[in-house]
Length: 139
Image (cartoon, rainbow, N blue to C red; front, side):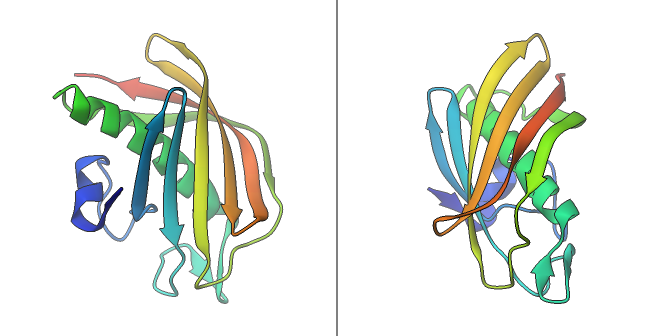
C-alpha cells in the first residue's frame, strides 16, 4: 500500500486537489485506491463530499493506476484528461469521516485512450459507479 507523500509519485495533482490518500495496488486489469473524506476537502460542502469530488476521486484513482505502472516501468508519469463520463450514478454522497474504497477496471485500451469502469464503496455501501474515457498525454 502507498499513502501519504508516496501518493505524489503516482499523480500530477498536488494539494488541495489530491483526491486519493491510499493506493492498494494493481491486479491484472483492476486497481484499488482509497480516500478518507475530511471536512477540509475542497469538494466537501455541508459535511458531505459532493458529486464533483466523487467523480474527481474516480479520475484520480484511474490516474494512480497509470502512475503506478509508469513507476514500475521507470517511465515518466503521463498526464491524463477525462474525455467523457458515462453511465455515472452517484447513489449517495459520502459524509465526512467516510473511508472510500475504489475499484477501477480497465475495459479497453486503444493507443492513448483508456476506457475504465469504477465502483466506489464505503464499507459495504455502493457510493458511485460509472465509466470514464481517459486520454493520456505521453511525453
